Length: 281
Ligand SMILES: [Fe+2]
Image (cartoon, rainbow, N blue to C red):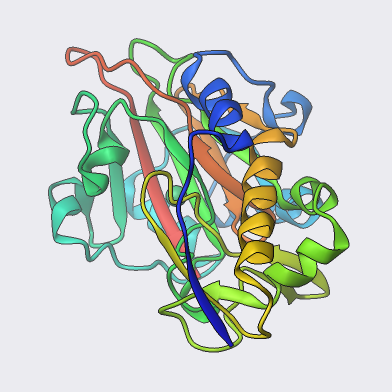
């Protein structure tokens, strides 16, 4: 077993491609080639449409005939999984019913990570809950647009398919990542793992923070560093798409199929964007 620390350098390839992807205000192509499925009726009927799309694509983009009330939003969630409580004290002002997070742009650019979902910052690519064991991570992230805000083209939700990232990694680096985990996680909770017969990542771009890792096989620190660099380069190089939010759009992301993040936004205090989020496992 070997331990080490990965720290981003300005010279790393992904630093430039991340800036281009997330901070250049370029509109990205829409997910699933722009296909939007209409859905209406009861929460169960909406869930049926979403489940079919998830099975096919690992993501669902649905146009609701009518916005779901908070009760119906939670009821919709019960058809896909169990809602995870929002326990972070910093986000409590934005939580309703314990499980719905109201993502409203309220802050200018901030260094406070817990407030960044509510700020103009871009959000670096990640899988949800990568700091937890696989069993504690959400399977689905559900986002419903209440109000796109005054600048709907900004703050796009970015999705990057894991399969595209995987194909850009050499077999050697794939193997290294499947033997490497965050230092605080138990053995076997590796960055790349097999799940339902597929290769699934559990990883966050730590941005300026240091990533403490453990390699379970004794690969050299140089090789682990190269594998993490290659992973980050692949995440920011591979087929990103962006959700163009409008009122009534419901997007569900399977956390085992896509990395996600967000482009930088321009806040408009008089007319902020408002998404509602559920995390299901
Ligand atoms: Fe996230």
